[in-house]
Figure 1 (spheres, helix red, strand yellow):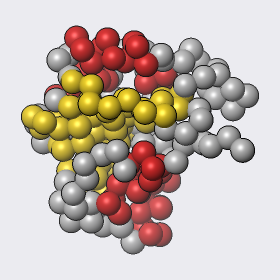
Figure 2: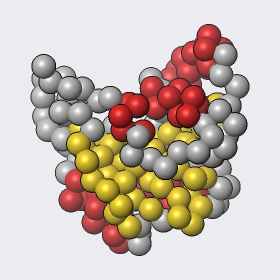
Figure 3: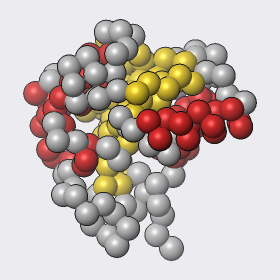
Length: 173
């Protein structure tokens, strides 16, 4: 049986501590946002998305699950300072299943770098191969993401499979 994306297994690759400040870019269904909130109970998690309806659904889930450490942010992550978060303020940024949709992939990654503290972690997870249920958009090959990161002076810490259909690249600032 093929293994789809396993959120908690992916999070095991991060150096998570309970007081960290973290963000999920393009939080959509917010599976990472909610899982992160449980891993950093004394910290802060930002769920960022350009679609108000996604954030509205997340707000309902936050209330239902009684989570108090999540803040939602409506924003354009491809714009300069698009997240609206302060520079050098976060420990971890996740960009899961979002870059394939971005028109300006380097701009989104640059925004992640801007808000990360020195030594902060950037985790990119994206589609590995086309399948019947993967997006119809062109997939973003890992080599392209590595090149963008290298140009931004981000260091590749680890590359791993995130299930049968996704790859993950972990960078540090």
